[in-house]
Image 1 (cartoon, one colour):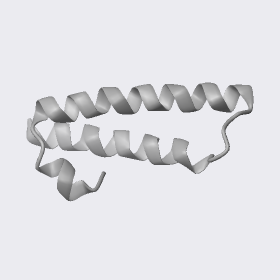
Image 2 (image 1 turned 45 degrees about the vertical axis):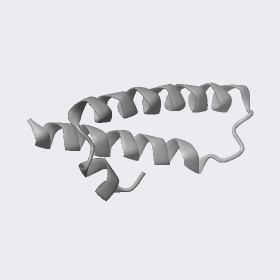
Image 3 (image 1 turned 60 degrees about the vertical axis):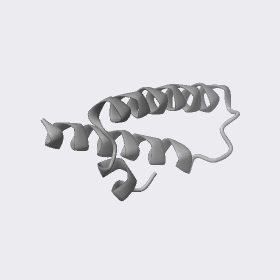
Length: 61
């Protein structure tokens, strides 16, 4: 999701998106541990998007 789209969301929507990202991150970690992760760049993308959402939540307070 792009930063412009994230800025238009409310704090509750961002928190819901953050929960989804954490679930995706967990799934990617499990795939990596079992050797099934084909797209290793996805873990980095999710980690950075989590950071973006946390930054936006901090700015909204």
